[in-house]
Length: 258
Image (cartoon, rainbow, N blue to C red):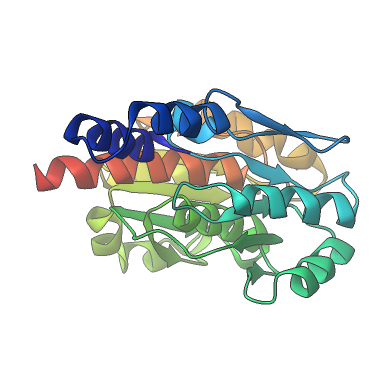
């Protein structure tokens, strides 16, 4: 149950179309309960009400059966969002396809969504420096779309060929939030941040040679960006960037309609 459903329920009570006792039962079974105990996991069913975004399954380290069970429980919850899982290993991807034939599966992002996607509000543009950054960029794009934003993808526009970035500047300016993904020396967010004033979250990736230190070099470069307004997620955290960007885009769309 999310905020919109609670608001609708309270409006129905105020209008007299739902009895107070029935509303209490609905609330007791939903947000007042807050979690479902599966034995191996306590699924947070209250997160959507608290934050506006439902719980997501981090599948790395979980068995395929555990991932499927948690997804099934989340899919049973109301809220108008698909049940989402990220970082699925190969066996979990196969199990999800078998358990949920209609699920959206992104093999590059290693992410799945069970249930219909919400209407897109606002635009997130995911910008990737190179094709080696594709898994993290795909995760950010998949999550942003599942969390209610429309998504534009701009791939392979790293600073080694800066003319490629200049050719898509109009798409950067058209977005409500940018996710800029880069490994190696991590310079791309600084360049993009100097070209546009669109809110920007940078994501360093663990792509690079030895002294990249698994993305640490890119992380430090982004943290030390001379372009103002650049915020930074952790190494390879496309999920966190996608959530942040979707929230910015959704709010921007609401204000644009006001």
